[in-house]
Image 1 (cartoon, rainbow, N blue to C red):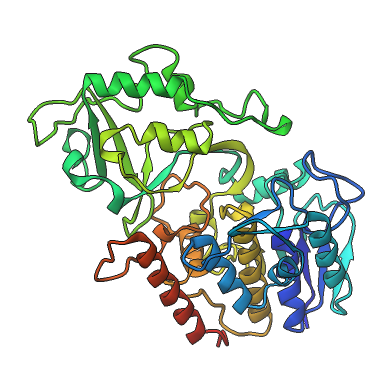
Image 2 (tube, helix red, strand yellow; image 1 turned 60 degrees about the vertical axis):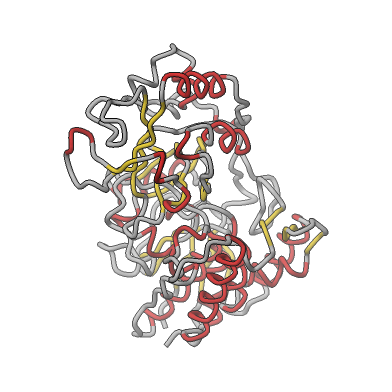
Length: 434
């Protein structure tokens, strides 16, 4: 049976290798450590957690908790190890980093069908390959991926916040496209009068920014995507003539053009998520919640993802990948991890599970699978392959990517619990992955 090369020994790579091997496929896992380290990595072991030892919430009525529950049902090796290495952290699943990495390494290296090869891969190999390189992929491998993808490779992540459509106040917003071009519901417009705008700008320019890592501090990283707070500091009307320009828009409630307007653009085909257009930001997450909620229509906004600006190598997946994580134009090539546009440790690991399972199925001559859209993993798989997403940005687990519950449940905790229950029931129906 064909051998598979998995490139990258992070969480996505080890999950891909594990699920291939568990399905009887001989696997070579390539990891350049300890011969070569990225600027962020320090331990020689596999599945190193760099930024945090927290794997987010445990409770099932949270998106992060649901994702982990689905991964357990699918036999995740990372979840097995995380549960064994847990340290007290309130409602979050936190782990002892060294023990977690060591345990994952032990399980992977002791599997009879997995061979770990410690060397840098500079070119994408021929044959059956899963690329699970993380956001700090080596320069040579990044160049090889860039040549494969053409223009569809990004070397930084400048993402604006995303809110749920249902949390935008309809009484304080209106749907319209600028100059009435396009469909009426292409954008949700959030108007501000002069007083509201000036208060918002003052709070924005005085808000606290997040500290950048040394490997993020490259002069060319933010070219063409200036943080909204930096733009605002350049003059009192700079953003009013930029991302918040009201030109071509008229509020139907007043009949007049607003002083300033934030536009929200659909983030997914179903229209459950909306992107704050032009609001790339480096503000700390609590500051984003505080300041952006000052915009009247967003006073009760539910943020599914906050804005980020950091080094993050990822491909234009909606144009390049299918929902099973296979590369559209090259049979036998799959991608997994943050390079696909999923964001977060467990999201990366989950994508590795699906890439490994689907590569195994392909080799066996079986049809690949995409989990139901009502599951968190299935919804993320569809998000990264959704051709309607024009401005692709990485996405972590959140309830906004799931189809809404009908009839609508107003209480958020009850709604999230119902979504989780539905997701696990959907997964149970296909757990054998026929």
